[in-house]
Length: 103
Image (cartoon, rainbow, N blue to C red; front, top):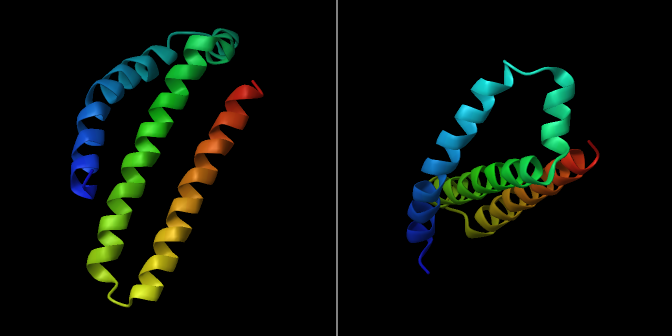
C-alpha cells in the first residue's frame, strides 16, 4: 500500500480513538489515584492505552518520514534519519508497554 494511503488511513482510524481517549482523560479527573491505577492495570485499560499510543506513534512515524523525505535531499542521510526515527518510535512503543505492564 502506498505511503500516503497508510497515513490517511491511520488518521481516519485515530479520529474515534482520540475522541474516546479524550473522554477517558477528562473522566480521569473525577476518579482517585487508586481507581486510576486499577483501571490502567486492567486488561481493557491496558489495551486502550496501548492502542492509543500505538496509533499516535504510527501516525507520527509516517508523518516524520514524509517530512524527512521532503526536506533532506541526501539519500544516505535521509535513510539514516528515517531509520533513527523509526527506531525511536518503536522503542517508545515498547517502553509504553513495559511501563503499563508494570502497573
